[in-house]
Amino acid sequence: MDLLARPDASARALRDALITYSGAPVAVVIADSDGRADRRGATVISTGAADITPLRTTEQGGKRQEETFTDLITVAAGIFLGQPPLRGPAWR
Image (cartoon, rainbow, N blue to C red; front, side, top):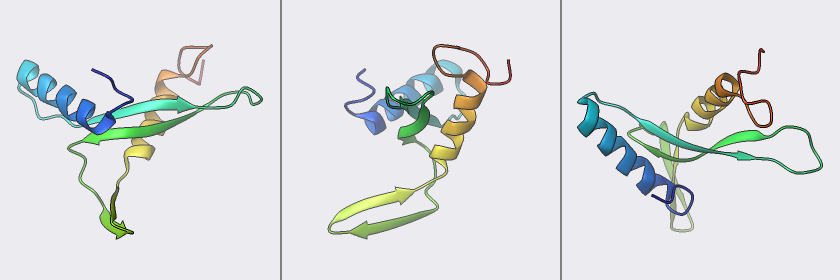
């Protein structure tokens, strides 16, 4: 599974596998860190999602965009999981 090349498709495949394995309904968010070498730390951003209901859908120039809370979910996970090189919760 190439999470970065097709993040929404990867999120759907992972969601389907988790549902098959556990039988529980789940939503999946694919995240990645985004940072620059000249700055300390990184930002965690959402790149893909499955089963997250959009707050609203807009279209501009023929491109459809769904606005969700996935970036907020991702930031919360980033705080909880931590970022390299520390690898651990931010409160350690």
